[in-house]
Length: 331
Image 1 (tube, rainbow, N blue to C red):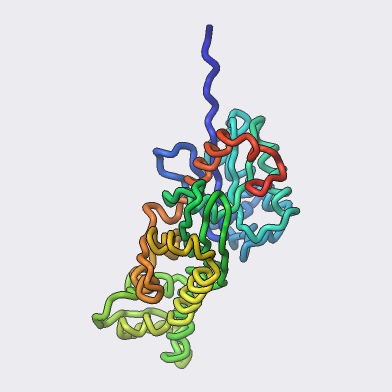
Image 2 (image 1 turned 135 degrees about the vertical axis):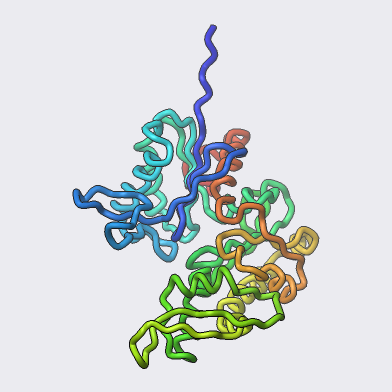
């Protein structure tokens, strides 16, 4: 008797900046820009923005265009996996928890069109916590902080739910904007977003007390010509003080609203950072210093949400009640 082939499962994390897809827990997740462009024939090119201005279907945690977002999801899976969508046994799609029920239904129906298997919709923060290695299905409190592109979400998770939850619009982009604004205001130099991001990734270190010269390139507002200047590295820390304080304030608010029986668990297990903003050097030390709670960065902060989706599918298989559409854990 022939064995029935095991159909693969797929997990997709839809973010403002990046979309991640995971097919196997032991393999690296594929990461693509959450954008597309239209070629000369008006065909959608997922993650390709060379010909025209990129279009982002999701912004600030909300779908900008439902039809485009639906088509984007189909195109992304096709590009990533080929024409094998109908062979997936399960598809997990992680979305921002700010999505309304109507927005969740749009994504659900879009995913349903590309598979004969089951589709599960999960909140990003729960999947991120699972992908970061936290045991979210136990009666134990774990704190996860997801520093995304345009928003930071902090939550204490327990028993597959959130016991305390908080947000701030200060994400990784806020650091770029703060650096760009600081240099513009102090030196009358327009750097642009790419240069500000380079400074953030290469020279910003919130825990480094040393000072050294940093070369900044841009356009002078006085001469209107290209110009380069030297600034002190410590200026970058001062420039991003506001987004850092907003993130720390959000974390403190979530900690203060955490039930007492879980607060001790968080003190023991610590705070786990995820998302692209977790890669900002020294931000873990800054949070630990400000909260008094040990803080760590998860192993793969950008792709851990997609990895966590695979874990949630496994949990669903073991818990039949979670498979019902309309449960608090899915749609």
